[in-house]
Length: 261
Image (cartoon, rainbow, N blue to C red; front, side, top):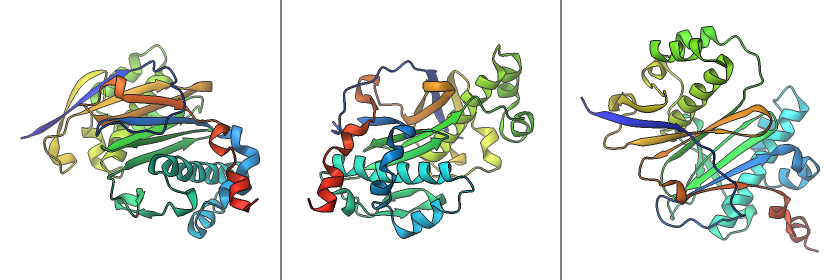
């Protein structure tokens, strides 16, 4: 039986300067976004979204959630445009397996993954597989039934004995989600088999229909109680990972340019 290694660790990454260059196949750009920063830019960002994306945004029950979805998708196109040296309006996405978005024209082999929770979003860009997840750890949920379905016995014990059980739950949950998203795999019965405790974990490669791929999973504490995880190849060194606070500088001149002024 072949096994995949998942090396899980907690990381205190410091923000890098704004950067859109990928250096080599294992380089990663990880953008953290406080969506509230772009609340006045929804109209412009909505013009970068497709009709299907706008229709999806209207299905959210909350107007704030609808706007956050639009902001995240618009910023994703702006970031991809900077990386690919294209106009944001020319970035075409399509839906791959398990509803995972991908570039329609991907001759450069760019991978990306996005996640958002309340007012926080993460965008990961790389030439190697990546997966991200972010959750609001201040959401007081009844997580015991989720653990019964999705966590191993060892993971349940880890959460139960932890000094901050809610944070421990979200740490493991975001790690699992990030790994699943890297593989473009949905949540199913196999999720219990993906153990993501601190340190080295071994998972049967049949769970992912994959061979010879070892991963590392980094946990991050973000602002205002948000917990996130990044799953990437084990060959990625931390100095190849640029953690960037995406701010309104990315919009400079964009609205004027689009209006043809």
